[in-house]
Image 1 (cartoon, rainbow, N blue to C red):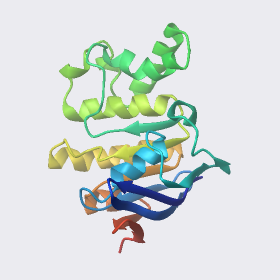
Image 2: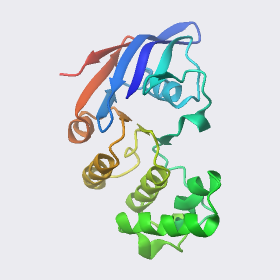
Image 3: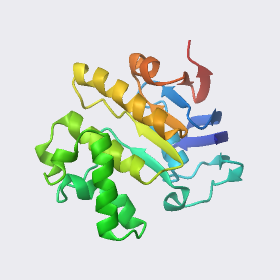
Image 4: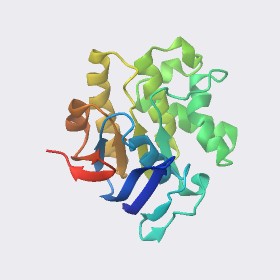
Length: 214
């Protein structure tokens, strides 16, 4: 279980997050709604360990991880721009995280190919990622995120760069893969339809505090 306890953060001299409390259970998808500038991405960065809160704590499975560096948290963070490596082929993009964890390259590539089969992308394994469509690149990004068996999944506006029809299809597909992974997932979005389609519940950042979205 992922827990945020009294997370407080400022933006310059302006309070941005004011004592935010949130729990996300294993297998649960919680959508974090709010307009641009409300602090959604800042909160996600704090959960990921990319930013320290001014006050408050991040807990995971009963352990205070507030001071833990990002690479030791074993969380997967996905951005709207996919953040794929243009110089690597599709298979090596997916294998990258395993290789970083010191898995031998042949074994990592075998596992990457297996994961690509799950996503219906095995026939693209040797292609460069820039040769794929936006939806295919986003599938590669999710495959790369899940192959390392992360303890939590953090999604920051993952579909905002896609056209409307593709967003709908990707929501359904991602929901299925995330459910199979059974990990706590925090979805940052400004799209109410996206939250309704993917999340078991939604919360909204209003004046630095979380409120249940109705």
